[in-house]
Length: 260
Image (cartoon, rainbow, N blue to C red; front, side, top):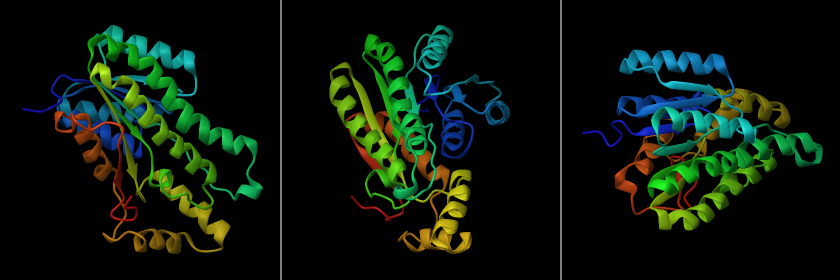
């Protein structure tokens, strides 16, 4: 029997990339999905794909994770519909690429607000519902850049280091309520975000995008890019009973590119 049959799973940033793979993986396990994203076109397509896969239409909400009132409203609607949230996947994230010397305050704020503040706001809104039933699993999407500071990504790295610190602190606060809080740290993931990043990096380093992408592969001992599905498998593990005695962890999914 599936670990997630009829479990209520709330996913942010679910429309594309890693979030989409996580959503489809939970769908195949029989979970009741609450899918959120700031892009409604991507969200609608995902909802259609989930319905085709499972014959069940998931709940979908447009949600900006940096908007506290919107976050609270969407979570209230989700709980009103399903009565609880068993699993929270804090996946919404952004990136941009720039040298620190050229970085603007807006560049910094964009990354920190979505990647770090967004996880805080969503977690804060969900926790009372998990505490009330003394149960819950939270998985936060961090990054290999949360363990290895990445050049041209100082603001992104800072935001993802913040995610790991937040994960560790919250895990200790809520352990007494039977809630597990962990993070997943993907490496060089083949997504639309990476497609944009290789173009940015190529321009900044005066290389071709193909050369940049090959460097990512060369830095990965297992010899290929990470796929969103690779990350989704670990997320499902962390949300499952198999990880009941794990909390405050930041698990690498990097093909060996990061080992600490």
